[in-house]
Image 1 (spheres, rainbow, N blue to C red):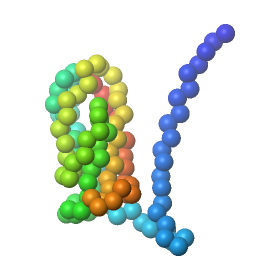
Image 2: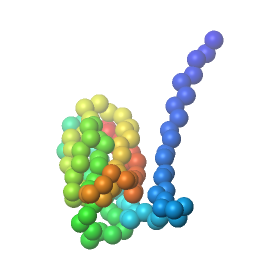
Image 3: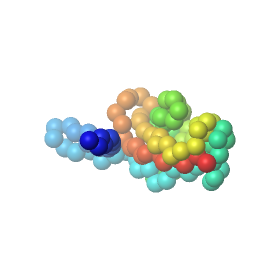
Length: 112
């Protein structure tokens, strides 16, 4: 009897409402840049998120890399995994004074 492993990835998108009025997100992630372009085991990787409202200073960035990291700037540097493979990481952007998530993206990283 063959056994199969089924992996289901769920992307949760939430809408914030006040009196049944849907509010638009406060920003939009346009791109996540990763440097260097080719990533090897143990490299120092620089992640930078480009958002629509790049001059805003009331946001914080929750990065889920090998561990969770919070920054108040749209960039972070982190060491690449020690094993080759493809990894999915996450970036969430929230207001500094609150925990409601307003924008998020999945970061795919291939380590050679």
